[in-house]
Amino acid sequence: EISTFSTSMLSSIFKGNSVIFATSGLSLLAGGAIGTMWCYSWQYVPSGIERWQQLWKEYRAKFPQCTSPFIEYSDEDSILNLNEQQYLQMMAPKLPKLTCSAQVKSVRVFVPLCGATNDLKIINDFMRNKITTESHSVEESKQYQLRVIGVDASEDAIQLFLDKLDLQEKKIDPQQMATPDYQNEYNFKNNYSIYNIDEDVFSNIFVYKHQSYNIVQRDIFDASVPRLVLRADAIYDNQSLSVIPPNLRKSYVELMKKVAARKCKILLVTERFEEDDRVNKDAAFEYYSVDDQDEVFRLYHKLAGTESKNIKLLESIPWNTDKLQKYGFPADYNNAYT
Image (cartoon, rainbow, N blue to C red; front, top):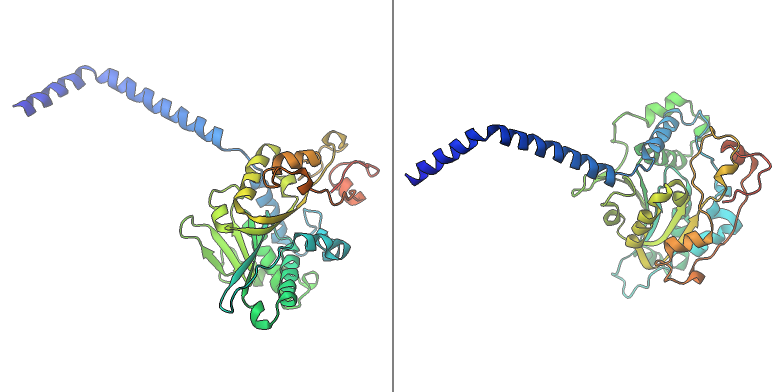
């Protein structure tokens, strides 16, 4: 009877207050929806990733019979090859000591926002040569496991890099290929059979693997990226800090802190200019200015052991006329530097 009484009692209460409960329910639903939208808008900060993905998609679809949407350099003009690879030598990590013939040590170089840059290959070739020349024997060199790790959200950029790498290995000049030939051999829509791809079981993120290369297809701010990068003995940051919106720079540096090994060296390439000096505001633009060495220290001071002497300005390279005009500056502008 108690059970029956309790049930009928509750029934009469719900009947008598159905309007109140309905109104309250609608209020809760509305409040929840508003709260959800507010939380989403607070957490989501546009990083321009969609625009970059579209640029790479358009470029890859027309490669090689098109002009790149980016300023491209030959391998000889790459920052890594300047002054007889001076900066690459400074960045390259020391090989860890081996204590026995059965020991295997990894050497890991991280390239954030790598796109389809050939700098990945330059790093790979340099480090392979370093391992070969500094090892006492062929057997010892095999004890070092090199990993050149890239992260980029664009599937097209990653696959384009691997396509170009395959062309180089086959000694085929992309400029001599007709576009249909390229598309028929490489650019199959949703066809991953020509790539070696691992899917991370925890996050369903694709990791493209080829020889020493591990390239993660993901937004650089994804929470799984530090785990997939794992550790970096050296970091080559080629303009990543300049293409990320300034309000996201602190979050970006937090990622560097998570993956950088204790004695990690970072080669940081940024762009510096005055935005107000652009005369053509409609020109294509990818960069945000990194003001000066003080801003770099404010961002990276913890990684540098709070010692400003650990952050050094190596060189300021003036923009050439092509780069100035591409980004809307006068041809004689003299306040834009890489």
